[in-house]
Image (cartoon, rainbow, N blue to C red; front, side, top):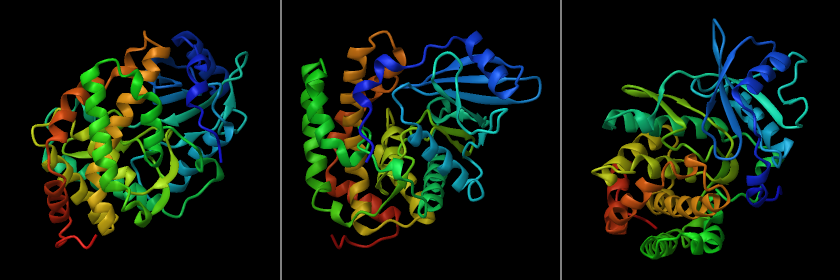
Amino acid sequence: MQPDLHYGLPGQAPRFDSAGAARLAREMYGLDASASALPSERDQNFLLATSARRYVLKIANAAEHRAVLEAQNAAMAHVADRVAFCPRVLPTIAGDTIGIAPGSGHLARLVTYLDGIPLAEAGARTTALLESLGRAVGRLDRALEDFDHPAIHRDFHWDLANAAPVIARHLPLVLDGGDRQLVRRVSATARQTIEPLQAAFRRSAVHHDANDWNVLVSSPEVVGIIDFGDMVHSWTVADPAVAVAYAMLDGSDPLATAAAIVRGYHAEHPLRDEEVVAVFPLATLRLCVSACVAAWQQQQRPDDEYLAVSQGAIRRTLPALAAIPPQLAEQMLRSACGLGPSRC
């Protein structure tokens, strides 16, 4: 099992500027392109634009294991003939899917650019759009169901199966006392529901990061799911839970949002009874993990605004989610899936 790189990442992030990225694209991929920086949690991404096409150049953190990047590439290749909404990896001039940036040692990859705008910037989240998100995540999970790679069996801080120790480690770093108490209470409530059920959860390769910046839309549907960087072998139900978590942020009716996504997901990749019950508490648990990890990362990189991109919305949304009775959430999600009373 690969160790968690979380604690070695901040000081080993790449430091390319746009000119350096354009030079890298020319030397490694033969592209005469302009480069503009894209946001990233721990790596560097650049949008490359030639006179004819656009691409995304991904430069990995120096602490990242090559095997993890190979696993991500293999997963994208595995789903390529099953879903049309994920990026494809393109080779270097030498024919390699992973290149080494001259002079730095950072590993680099080039992937296709997908049209669409991030869900975070898409305006109204209609029921049709949310169901489309659920269907897309369900199709991706179905495509990944028979995929495996040794490197995705890793100890990873974003893995929802690791939520308890990650929260315990970083919760003291959440500076606001009220926020800290809320995260402690919400995560404890979520775990009370999840832990008796988790033995029944399926495990598979999961994308694990269908957040509102990694989901691309062209109304009224989802047209892209990008960034396989958080891929891990874990609970299958974590994927719809992550999608639900970020789609609920700042929404007026979080349960209706969750129900629409779960309805779409269940139509493509049916959930077990225990998994339906767990989606909502897992979604709230993901937001608690995000608050704790962001607190740690911001301590390491206080000037990196991207690390706080979701935190205001999480602070505003968690109180509303905490007020929802677990039985009501379960009832609505079971109804969305066309299921009767719980057998759990």
